[in-house]
Amino acid sequence: MLLYLIVFILLVAIELLYFRIADRFNIIDKPNLRSSHTHITLRGGGIIFIIAMWLYTLIYGLNYPWFLLGLTAIAGISFVDDIHSVPNRIRIIIQFLAMLLMIFQWDIIRADDWWMILTALVLCVGIINAFNFMDGINGITGGYSLAILIPLWILNNRIGFIDADFLVVTMISVVVFCFFNFRKRAKCFAGDVGSVGIAFILLFALGKLVLLTNDLSYLVLFAVYGVDSVLTIAHRLMLKENVFEAHRKHAYQIMANELKMPHVLVSSIYMIIQLVVSAGIIWCPINHWMYLSAIIIIFSGGYITFMRKYFHLHMKWLTSRNN
Image (cartoon, rainbow, N blue to C red; front, side, top):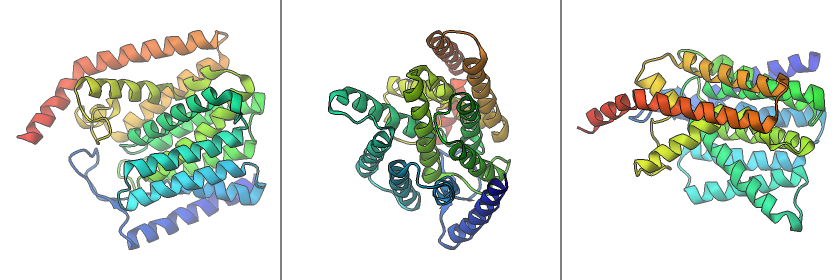
């Protein structure tokens, strides 16, 4: 417990130090037409997640070296992208290389299992970019990450698929970040380094769980983000838009922008829904695949209903901006 307190104090101090550095070198996020915020805010506060993993390694040992190398690579290129734009092809290449390192740490790289490796690569890169796309309002990245970490911690106490200190240190870093971000007027944003970094960390833990239990239905721990991201991409394809361009068409963005709901409230809704869904797979005596299928159907129906009722407000805003 004392070590956890020391980690917390160190991470708070490091985050405050980063704020001084970001302010000194003008690492900021300026609002634009696609933004859901209106004030200039420090960017890259999510670097604390990566620092936490290095701190975990220093204190508890080099338990996951290939994971740490992959995390450093993917977070590093994301941090550079936070400062000045990096070509998409370079970011994607680094992401795939980082994923290969994660898969190597999972110990599933075998010549006969190339299809599993390819599937894991595509799925993981997709999830990481979904996390990045969803990072648009105060509190959503930190709150949603806690909504995944808490169920992972509960499951780890039952199953023991990863070092418990790994999850606790990660949770401490997210709590520290939330203190500065999960508020009406955020002190900092996660930036790509934060959203991509925490997604990489969560994916690593989830992968350990899936491989130990041989149960891919634990993807339900990412259900809220997953359904929102996939259906938003499908919606944009229907509208013949470039899915790689910034936009404000996610359900949470419409809630925050067009419906004028407070950011903290919207982030709390996403967090609570994911916690409830995760509680179901942990404690409900139901077939996991049936449960995952039911959640996807229910969420998809809710998303479509929401968009049919409120998407016209976004189109109205878009038209007014273009005129």
